[in-house]
Amino acid sequence: MILIKRNIPNGITMANLIFGFLSIGSSFLGEYQNAAIFILVGMMLDSMDGWMARKLGAESPFGKELDSLADIVTFGVSPAILIFGTTFSYMGMTGLIIAGMFPVFGAIRLARFNIDEETSVKKYFTGVPITAAGGIIALLTIFNFVVPEAAVSAIYTLLCVLMVSRLKIPSLKDVPIPKYGTIITALLLSLIVVTRYNAAIEYSNWIIFAILAYLVFMLIHFLLKKKRLSEK
Image (cartoon, rainbow, N blue to C red; front, side, top):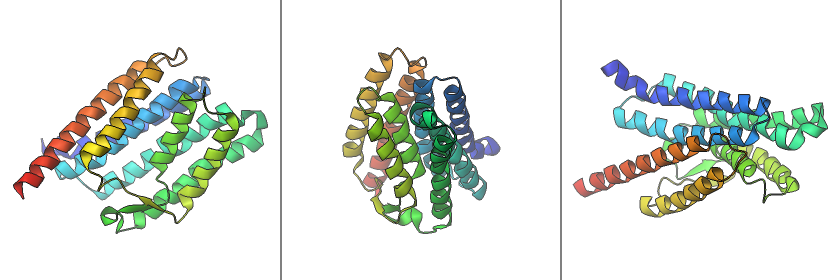
């Protein structure tokens, strides 16, 4: 029982990795909207594994390394292949090299995060997290009907730079959960609408299920935090 408890967070991390692989496969098949969906599902899973590990007392160096390896695939390699297929493919090998910069900068960002012992207590991130950067690439793909290709290229370049920059990005850890939850809920519900009625997205039900599960996760997080504060 203890062994199962300790490996629940690792199971969530490996599910994140699997969705990263599914995204890569979908890009190879030319199903770019589906590839973006799988990245977003992985993003939600990534937000859960660390929280689950802390709640279960299952944090470990192994889990931390596994999480980084999963992140570089799901939020580094997958978005790079996705944006090559949607934006840079006409450039051939040059486009591949440009797209390849995304996982390179992402790996630098992850390595710097892993050796920063004060990260857990800081109120900010140094550079844009690779998870956020990869998620933005996925969202740009889903909303490509309103985002010009030139803007996508510019945002991609900016994300690469911001990942390795020393810019202080505010952490959302100290944002009151109700306010944070309202913003995220509005974004996720709008995403449900777009994916549900976009004929190019074959696996729209996946994102709907993932979003509903994530909202339940946020509700549990809020209730536990409220209980903890009331006990003080």
